[in-house]
Amino acid sequence: DYDNFIGKIAVGRIVRGKMKTNQQVAIMNGESTRKAKIGRVYTYNGLNRVETDEAEMGDIIAFAGIDDINIGETVADAENPEALPSISIDEPTLSMVFSVNNSPFAGREGEFVTSRHLRDRLFREVETNVSMKVEET
Image (cartoon, rainbow, N blue to C red; front, side, top):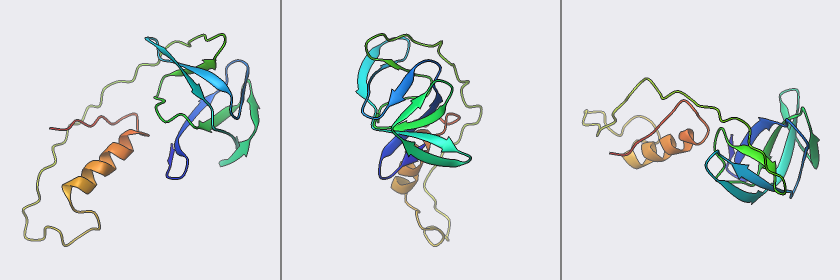
């Protein structure tokens, strides 16, 4: 998920241990390990996200503070990191090409009509949508 105020929000389930606000963790993606710090921790009460100081094993949580986290990475204890098996996601099966609108109604409908606005919107969507892949040409 993404929030304009706090940035990227990762969602997952705690398999072992606990997660606390401001905790030092290791981010593992199979190839490398890097250190990071958890900003905020959220649990869920029904459909509502509720901020908490600590979450434990079995909880489905969301956390913020790590802007470069990606789908399929393991967040582990910084002192004893153990990676979970990596999850592979199939490539998208639909391809689209966007080009300049040269119709007589170009720019008269919609709020964001320039290619720059469209590009920015697509790259924001890629941050949270695992089924999309965007390539610049």
